[in-house]
Image 1 (spheres, rainbow, N blue to C red):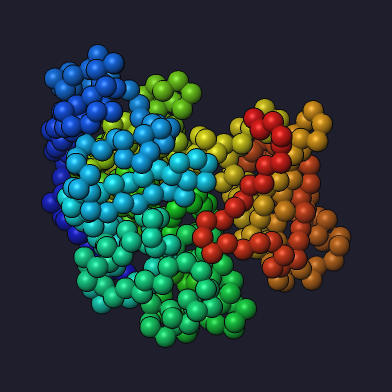
Image 2 (cartoon, helix red, strand yellow):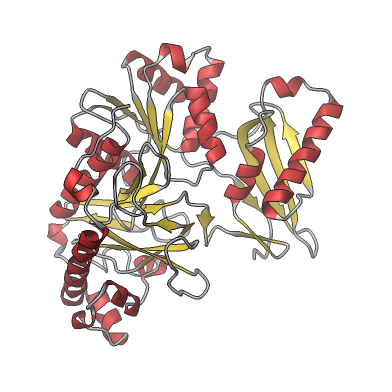
Length: 439
């Protein structure tokens, strides 16, 4: 795929230039929040902070964190820094655990978002003349329209199909000559699986060359499967509704982490337990401060996503810091028999077996005093024909590998027939926690 940069000057500016740029914008943003947001005026004043106290980038540590409950407690628009009639578009999270998280955009916010999405898509090789098949959900979810706006700015042809209706999606991809697929990684796996059942060969009958996948954690093993089964180059995408949606960071062709667009976002890494700031190269929770957001600005937002930030120059020539693949969320971390485990670790362990398909479930229960931990995973078609002795040996190897990766051995690994586990045309549900008193 064609390589190149959407904004050469910005994407390759020196680290010193970036830091000066960030400091100027940070000082402006803190002043803006102090003067225009009643929420932040109160928060900063309570902490004894004034805009004049921000003299260096490190001074951001004086500012209290913003967390998801702040947004929920001020639902729907209690954290606005502009008049309501200046908001031109609203997006929101699903809100399955309470009030949804609302993203409110001014005209300027929309311009910035479209610019960031165009830059992100361009980084992966999307160009005018490409046909971009967008299978993220449209509507309040930021995925569909975020990719739409970016592809539109580049001048690519857009197939705004949204999620669902998998067979129809495959027909449209084939008939309209889609070259780029944008969806969740779990849906990409489902598309590949459905193509195989329909007798379609994506490498021969389709023009797909790349895929941009995000909105849920996924492992390197899932990437390998997607690339092998669809015959494409897969790119990891990162974003949050609270920040702008997708467009916060993206992989380049080096696949050595996701470039965070630091001219618009200041990122920190903290210890999720203590809140202590960590150095580059240390794993911790990512904290973001959008530097150009006007409608609903946010200072020091705790993402709950666990990653590592690297600041050395990428081989692609870009100087913006890179976040390594998110290994999990601090609020999604499972505590099983006192051991901290991320679902992505279990995925990594089981996806290394070619005998297994990409569908699995992690089931947790506590029928008595101790946690019971089991995994259900589908067999790939060829493996389904193996003898019981071979399957028992495979099960033992899976249990051993899960123990090697997580330090825990599951009580059971159930190998089920191909197609037996439920499919998702959006975000996959991987964990079923039946414990009455969840840890």
